[in-house]
Image (tube, one colour):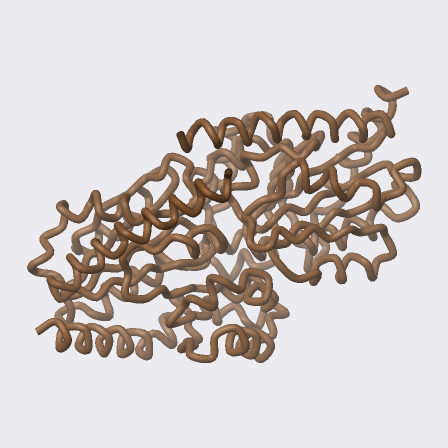
Length: 221
Length: 221
C-alpha cells in the first residue's frame, strides 16, 4: 500500500518534471538542480557563480528551504532574479513546487536557472524537478567516505564540486580516496576541486556552465 | 489521502517506539538518538565517547546508514558491541528498524545505547525510535544559519554539540549568532562546544551522559 502510493507520487512528479523541462527548453534555458548537504556551500557557489558569469549569461535562482528566506536574501543582493520556495519542513523540492513559481520569472530573458535544493544528501536525489543536470556539492569537511555512503546523489550528478579545499591542511580528508570512489560510482562525472571562500577552482565550473548553455541554445534553435 | 497514510505511519511508529523504550527502560538502559548532517562528526563523537567512558559505562552502538558498514567497522575497533542497520536508501531510521536489531545486543549488560541515525538534518527528526533523548551535532563548518533553517531537529535536542571548533579560525562561523538562535528555538538545550579531532570540550558531554544514565537507573530500580 505505502509502496504503491510512493510509486504514484514519483510517476506524477516525473510527468510534471517533463512539462517543466519542456517549457524551459522551449525558452532556451539551461536548468541546474544544485544538491548537497546542509552547509556544503551551495549558496556560496551561487554567489560566486553570479559574479563569475556577470555580463555573459542571464541567470535566475530558485531557492529551496524548509523555512526562512535567508538564502534568497543573500542571492538578491547580487541583483539577479530570485524566487524562494519554502517546503514547510519538507525534505526535498518536487517538480510541482518548481512549476508553481516559474511565472514569477521572466523566462524570455534568461539563459540559465539554478535551483538550489533543500540541504540534504538523500531525498532530493529521488525527485526530478525538470532540470537538465544535477550538480552535487561535497565539502571536504564532510569526509571522504560520503560518496559510498550516499551513492545515488553522486551517481546522478553531471558535475561533483569538491568544495572548501582551503580547509584541506586542517582536516584528514583523503582526496584520492574521495575522487576514486566518485569515479567508481559515476565514471562520467566532471570533478572540480574548489573553494568558494578562497575563490579558487571556479573558472572550470563557469566554463562548463557556459558550454552547456551554448549547447542547449544551439539545440533549441 | 497522502496525509492520512503519513499520519498512520507516524502513529504506528510511535507505538513501536514506545515498546522499544519500555523494553530498554526495564533493562535500565539510557538511549541516545544521535542526529546531524552527513559529516558533522557523529561517528567521531562516538569514537571519543567510547574511549572517554571506558570502565565507567557499558555501552553499545546501533549504526544507521543508507548503505555500507563503514561506521560500524570504525566503532568495532573500539571493542564495544555494534549493530549496523542499512536503510537501502531510506533517509531515516524508524522504531521498527531499531526494534528488529535489539536481540543482537546483550541488554542485561548495558547501561547506554547510542543510535547513530542517518546523516540528515531533516527526516530523522520526525521519527522517534524509542530513545530517551535526541542529541544533535552541528559542525561549525556548516555555518551558523543552520538552526533557523532546520529548526525541528534543534528544537527536539536535549543537547546540541557544536563540533569542529578547531576549525573556527579558518571559517566565518558566528558562534554568538548560532548559540542565540539555538536558545531561541530551544531554551532548555544544553550547548557544548567541542572538537572531536582535537579532543576538546568533550568532558562536559561525558559528564552529562553519566549523570543521565545514573538518573535513569535510579528511576528503574
